[in-house]
Amino acid sequence: MFVRNKSNPLITARDLAYKSNAVFNAGATHLGDKVVLMLRVESRSGRSHLTVAHSRNGISDWKIAKKPLMHADDGFRQETWGVEDCRITSLAGRNTHILTYTAYSPLGPAVGIAETKHFKTVQRLGIVYPPENKDAVLFPRKIKDEYVLLHRPATTDGRHIWIAYSPDLLYWGKPKMVLPARGNVFWDSYRVGAGPPPIETERGWLLIYHGVKKMESGLIYRIGAALLDLENPHRVIGRTNEYLMTPTEPYERIGDITNVLFATGGFVHKGDLWLYYGCADSYVCLATAPLSDIFDTLS
Image 1 (cartoon, rainbow, N blue to C red):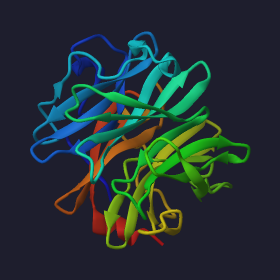
Image 2 (cartoon, rainbow, N blue to C red):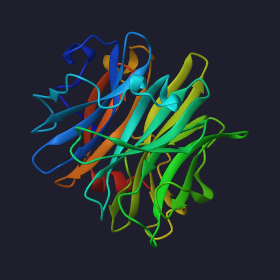
Image 3 (cartoon, rainbow, N blue to C red):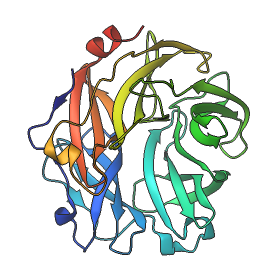
Image 4 (cartoon, helix red, strand yellow):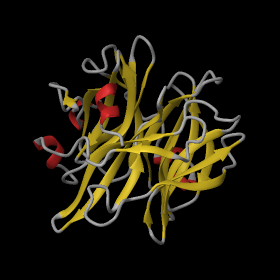
C-alpha cells in the first residue's frame, strides 16, 4: 500500500553540518511552498536534540540548520538527557506551530509542549505530563472548544494510547484510554503509540500509529491506522487488523536499533498521505499512499 520513495533514506547523519551519530523520527509540516522537518538528531554523546530542515519538494535538496533549535543544554532540567521525537501541529486559530515532544531527564521521558512561528526560535510552554509518558500529538483544531491531545503513559497493564482535553494547552484532564495494545500474538500486541497529528477527513480523524510486537529476536515496530470519531475522538470507529508497513528494506532492518519503523510526520498532498518515518533509529525516510486505500483497510 505504501510506496517507499526511491530517494530513501532522505536524510542521514552525513547530511548534517556537524558531527552526529544518527538522524531519525522527524516531525513534518507542509507550509505551501516547502516542507519543514523537525529532525531528531542523536549526538555522539548519546543525547538527542531537534534540528530544522526544509525542502521545496519534500524529497531532495534539504536545507538543514547548522545548529539545533532545541537542545539538552538549553537549561531546562526536564530535558538534561535530551529532546526527542517531535510532532508538529499547525493549529487552527493560532498563527504559530505547536511542537509536542519527549523531554528526557534522569526521571524518565515526559511530555513537553512548545510553540514556534518561523522555526527559528521556540518558546517552551512547559511539561504537561510527567514521566513516564511520551508519543504526544496535538489535534489540529479545537473540538467542542477544547484542545485535544493523544499521549502514551506507562501503566501497570501496558503501553496504550490515551486522550486528554485542555482549555489552554497547559492543564489537561478528562483522560480516557483510546487505543489499547491488542495483546496476544497480534502485530500491535506489545505496545502502541500515536504517529503524526491526526488528519481530519469526512469519515473521521485518521490516526497513523506504530505497533510493537515482542519476538524472540527482539521488538518489531510496524505502522497501522485507526479512525476516530470527529466530535468524540475518544471513540474508535475503525482500526487496521493488519499492519500497513513493516521493516523490509536494509535501511529499515539494520541500524542502531533493528526492525523499526517510527512515523512522526505526515500530511495529505493531492489525495496521498506523505508519511515521514524514522528507520532503525538511524535514518529519515518517506513513503506515500492514497488515502482511499488506507480507508479500505479500516474496519
